[in-house]
Length: 475
Image (cartoon, rainbow, N blue to C red; front, side):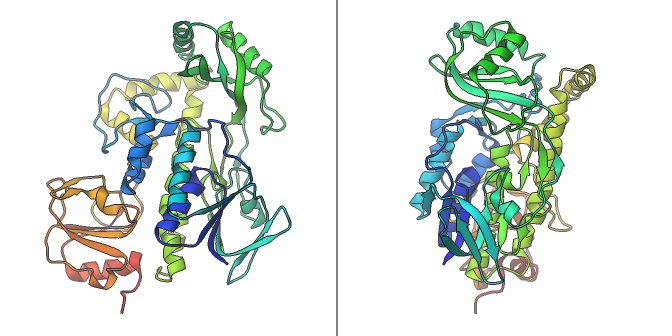
C-alpha cells in the first residue's frame, strides 16, 4: 500500500510529489496520458512560484531556461509608466513554456524518488476510515492511505467522491495554437501591437524562427470544448480581426479554452484531497492558473507528509482547505474582473479607462500587481503583527540567504536573540541563530512553506505556538 497516490502529472501533481518525497513519503504519481503533452497551456511563472522553487533550491534550473519579463501590464494588460518596488527578489515574470516547466518538475520528482506511471487512468475511487482504493481502467486496483486529485477541471477524482463544483459556465471561447507564419516578423508584431489595443484576446507571440503561439476569440461556443479547433477556424478569426492570417500554416498543436469559473465546495473528502484545476478553474488572464496549482501543492505537501508521519496536529490537514480555498476565491474574483476589462463593449472599456487612471497611483498599481503575482497572500493566523501569516520574503543573513535554510522543507526558527529553543521539535524545526538588518522582529517561526507562524522573543509564547503547526514535542 502506498502512503499517497497522486492522480495527474501536471505541474501541481509533480510539485506535490516532490514535496512529499522530500519528507520520505511513499508516493505514486499516475497519469492518464502515455506521454507528456506538447500543448503550451501556460507561458510562465510569477514571483511567488519562483520563490517557492528557490525555497527548495531549484529556481536556478528554471531561470536558466526562461526569459525574464517586466511585470508591467500583468493586471488586465494595462500598461502604465509608473515604477513600483515589488516585495520580492524576483520582480519579473519568468517566461517558460509549460512543457519545459513540466519536464523540470518531473526531473525533480524522479530525483527525489517519485514513481511515475504514465498511461495509467484512474476510473473510480472508494474509501473507508483506513485507506483509499483506486480503480484503474485496466481493471486493476491500488490501495493508498491518501489520494490527491490533481487531474484537472474535469477531475475524475472530484466526481468520484461527490464534491460539487459550482460556478459559471463559459460565455466566450478563445482559440490557441502553435503555428508557422510566413509574414515578416516585424509586420506581425506591429499589427498585433496595434490590434491588441482593442482586441485583448488576439495575439501572436514569437517562439523562434517562423513559429508563433497565436490566439484569437472564437466565433462562438462549442458543444465540447475538448475538441480542438481546425486550422481553418483559426485562420478565419485572424482574417476577421486583422484582415490577414499572416500566412498561417503547419500547426504543431491547436486548442481552445473558455472563461468558465468554478470552485470546489470542499478540497477534502475523508482521505481524498483536491489540488490545482481539480479544485478551481478560472479565465487564464494574468497567467495565474499554473501558479495557483503549484502554490496549492506547496501548501499541502508538508501537511500531508506530517499526517503520514503521525505528528500532524488534528486539524492541520483542514488548514489546507481554509487557506488555499480562500486564496482561490480571490484569484477567481480578480480573473473575472480582468476578463470583463478585456471585452470590447463600451461599458467594460469605460471601466478599463478608469482603472488605467487609477493605476497611475503607485499604491494601486503595486496592490493589483502583487495580487496577481501572489506575494501579498496572508493566511489567517489570528491577531498579531502584519507579518504574521504572510510568506517571509528572502532576506540576507551573515551566513547566506534565508531561503537557503528552507531547502529541506522543514520548519525554521530564525532567532536574532540567541535565547530561544525549539529542542523538543528538532526533528521537524531547525533553529538558526542569525541576525539580519532586514528582519524587524526579534525572532520568527516559519512553517515549511515559508509563512510566518509566530513572531516574538518570549520562550513561553514560542512553546505555545510550536504545537499548533508542528504537533507534540518528541519525548
